[in-house]
Length: 395
Image (cartoon, rainbow, N blue to C red; front, side, top):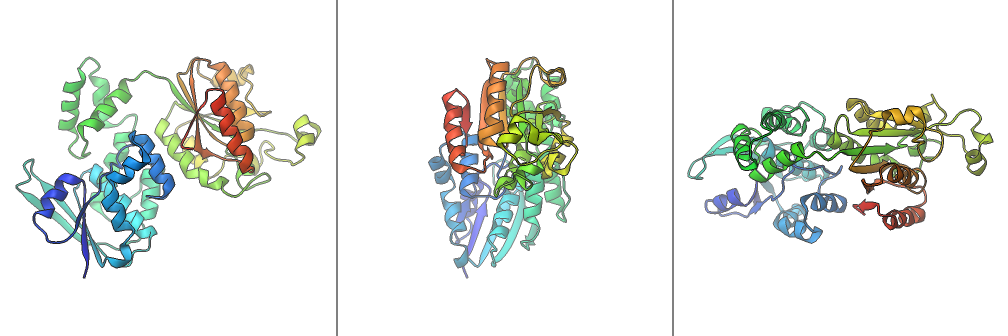
């Protein structure tokens, strides 16, 4: 029988290799940090994670080379033993691996060993050994890591990890409050303090530093969700693939958080066919008050959760001179990110409007969070956006 051990990182992997005569493979990721894609370890996932870690895709693959070799050889592995700690950092890594195994329909045995250790690694205590059924982890992963929403499962350690993960990313979380309460403390001392207060989170010094810089950074950032409405997803002007943006946009909304998210709704009335747009595009859509006008899927819930500010616009681009629109827009912004539909019509139009409104702001369009019914025009408009100094990411 072929058994493979997967460990949380290189340090414990080295310790375990000295004690077992079976293959031991490190999982060198930090799912505690940054956003994720809907399905772990796809090409999109790898590109997304590499970008946020600030490394090339090649370097990311190299860092996880042994792990990927195991995932590509599952049919020849009879049992996997997953060694992880109890803190949120380890539990989110464990959740990601269990999700990937569930999606791959792995039929071998899966055992998890939760452990605790002292700082010198001369004493490792096994807290829990469990034979796992690969069922329900995809749903937990989506709720927690993709949508950043709480969910309960039948694993007390996973529930604890979920709690501290969400608290870590909360604008009002315990660690964020510590940073805010020590505005004059130097960065080194504050990192030390955070590490002392964050045993359940499992933070590294790098993550503590990132949290401090994020909280102290005064840059004004905004996310604009453009026209992600039912009629553009699966309604009158819907197209295949538009629904796939839902989870990605939700992740963005939760990343930006309350006070930093705006959304637009394409808004028409009964006389639509008499307008210039209606004569050129004679398909009635997004009539105010109808289902088609409403925001699509989980994105609607996420916008409500962060109390996002809405803008109803009558044409492709928002009218920043309209008193109602002007009232909800911030006076100044340093960075603006756009997601939503449709890339070659309303997304590009609003990129131009916002660039004119905020001429010194960096404008970003995430290519993985926008799309079009016309794939050729979609690719061309990404080139056009880059041409007038919009930063196109994840292309």
